Image 1 (cartoon, rainbow, N blue to C red):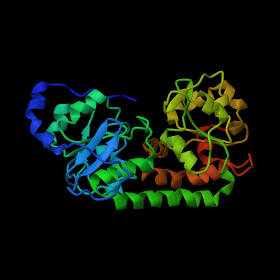
Image 2 (image 1 turned 120 degrees about the vertical axis):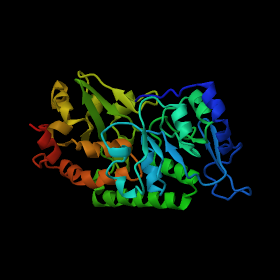
Image 3 (image 1 turned 90 degrees about the vertical axis):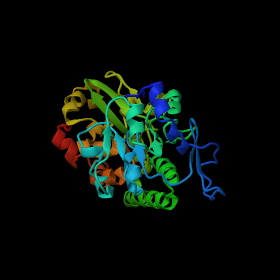
Image 4 (image 1 turned 180 degrees about the vertical axis):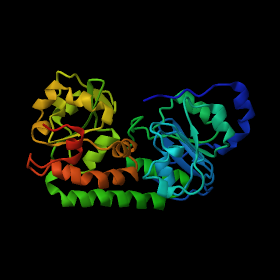
Length: 343
């Protein structure tokens, strides 16, 4: 994951000093929904507190996936962060129904303080952006910056927590709660349809250039599986250290991937890297036909891991997961067959 390095030009900061009036001081905890006497909204986060004196109207999204949540809450970001894929305005299919108005501007490459200042934002959403404390301090002189909570990882803040934080900042707590409830209902209904999934092990893995790896429990792809009742393998838990959202494995030891369900989050061009793993043929998920390879679009929805992308991925993957876990190795899993992962 690339990090960003905003430019530190003192002349820019001087010209934009007037924008600092968007910031205030002091805060209350995120969990408090009581209205403050002065009308301010105050949210604690990893670098301090964000204070808003009115619902923001000009929102810049520099988190790699936060545009989804902002759009779902009925606000059109004026600019969004470039991540991956070729989507107009960085708005993916699951988010397009929420877009009202023109496409946002796209901030590509290293983030520029001057470019953000020129947009005259009244809120910068930096959850999952990778901003350092120094970078946060610079941007906070432009506008209030909303970051992830103190106990949340840099990448992988739970989707519901992102929705709550952004909803609080936008003055849309009730709508955020409604979106969270709707997504939870989707997962709950899927669990009810497939009670046998509860407690089974599942891993979201990848292989690129012959190098395998897996996503840890804090990653959005693994959180998706956890929402369906799956748990990680003991082997993956043992090697998941340091708070990283992924862990590299060696081709000689794929034991952390020996799960009841193996979901490959790899591009189509990486399939030879998967099939070329000699030790893969000894994994139970392979020998018993329990591998799934989401399409690039669905894999992207899992990577975004937002309050609206996860239900989109669930709708696309539920039948595939059911086929993989029906107890009959002869049942074809369409994505695995199409990719040549079987046999």
